[in-house]
Each structure stands twice: as C-alpha cells, then as structure tokens.
Length: 387
Image (cartoon, rainbow, N blue to C red):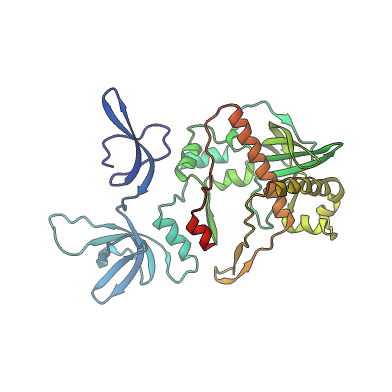
C-alpha cells in the first residue's frame, strides 16, 4: 500500500503506508480500484517499544516485538531519566547528514520496569498499538450521554436479573423466564449501547478504531470508556436502564415457536453471581437468591431444562473445556492458577444467549439484511485420523 488512494468512508480496514493488504479489485469507468478487505501485515511504526539497558559505552533499547529487527543506541542526553531494565517507547533520532553508523534513538516515555509483574500486559498493549487513551470529545460524550430518542416498551415490572462472575464491574445482559400452560416464555435483555453510541459520533469513531475490548490477566483495555460501559450501559440492580430485549416462546420440548424484539426500559431486580444462583438451586439459598428462588430462579432453570433437551436432540458440537483463571496478589504477583468450576448457571446463560442470537439471525434473514456467519469448515481426513 503506497498511500495513493485514501480510505473510503465506512471501510473497517485502513491500511497504512507500507502495509500488505488483501484487496478486492473492481473496474469502474475504465479505472481499476482496490478496496482493502483486511490488513495482512502491518509495517512497523516509527516508534519502538522495548527494554532499556545501560552499558559501559552508553545505553541501548532492545525491541519487545520479535518481528522488530532494529535496536537503538541511546546517548546520555536522550535517555530522559530511563534506568537499566525500564520499558520505554523510543523514536529514531534524526540523522541529519549522517548516512552510516548505528541507529540512534530518543526515549520518549518510560512505561514501566521489567521487574513489575504487570509489565507483560504493558508490553503487549504498546507492542500491538492498542489504543488506551480516549480523546476528550469521546470522554465528554461518555460523561454526558444523550440517548437517541426512541419509543420504548415498559419492562420495569418484569423481574429480569443479571447473573455474572462475582467480580464483574459491569452487567451486560439480564434474563427472565415464565412457565406457560404449554411451554415457556423467556426474555433476554442487553444494554442498549446503540442508544448512546450514535453513528459517526466521537464514541462511534473510537469504538471503530478498537473493534473490541482487549482482556489481559490483570486488566481490561475497554472499547468504550468506563464512564459509559460501567454506568449507563450497565444493567445495575434497581436502576432504570435502556435495553434491547428479545422475547422468545418455547414449547415444552424446548423448540422455539416465536420471538419478537423489544426496545425497552428495564430495572434489574437483582444482581447475582453464578455461585449464588447455583447454590440456591442446589438447596442452599441465601440472601437475594433465596428470596427469588421460587419466583425467578426455578422458572429460569425449568426453561433451561427444556432448552437443554432440544439441544441434546440437535446433538451440536459440545466443547465444554475447562477454563483457567490466574490469581493475583495486590502487588500484581501471580499467586496461583486455578480451574474455573463449570456450573449449570454458566450453561444456562450461554444457552439463553445462543437462543437470542438465533432469533436475531432469523430476523435479519427475514429482513434480507446483510449479515455474517462464522462457519466451521469440515475437518480434513488427516485431522480426523489424528483425532
């Protein structure tokens, strides 16, 4: 990519100069045009993230990225307070008329020290160019959200609850189930982020730049500022929140008969952890989980039992693999690695989310809207034999 043609508005892929990209080639009025579909290889940027080391002849910065071949020698006047073992951001020093000799660099910022347990995350963030800071315009929009006007259905009388890990900072989804004479009514609600992240707004542009939140063992680099994701876009217990919901009707065997989507207002009836909800179902109710056992939790598990039966009849690929969790001390040191316990409460939420996604796909297909499916291809004979 040489930078001769600019990025078209709305494209998700923006190659930089020197990048290698997969492009779609079309001919328009005799001219050949290329549109980047995905960037295959990024040209290394001018700045370098690495470790500063002090030697008898001066300092040098060794790159953190294994693909990076450059090393910078750092003169005393350019180390800007960096000490041996510091993790730094370095830029090349202008060479002037000098054409030969070692690469000289200037240390622009010290981001940590190699002995800091958190240094691995810092290195990964900077080496991959993950945006950490939000511009003031995006932060201002997050601090003072102005939701887009929309007609909303009142769901505040329905006891939707959130079930999340015990240490969750925000609550993205809520669930509810009710037994009918001939089946089950299930509602899955998610925070209506689109009401606040309006098209081409500062938040929208920043979300496009990131694409997703990035999770590390000791931190999260969010796609949206915490001022929004952990506040107006978090389904907090007892607080009025805008939501998108899908109401699904299942028969007694767990087969979906119908669904409808709702743009609504809800108020979470309770915030439960997976462990609290599971303990109540297992006969050890306590606190809010005990109060909601008969009215909220048992109907949820009843609906899940019906959906599980239908799932077993479909015989999908079931990769119920153990998940590991790293335990950290207050100082960031690793205290241990444990296997997360898999509970029916986890499977319940997962199954409800799958059903909500199936309903969304069916609705989009009915509207003939463009959409993307992730398809797992048939494995090769060699892979089957190895398995």
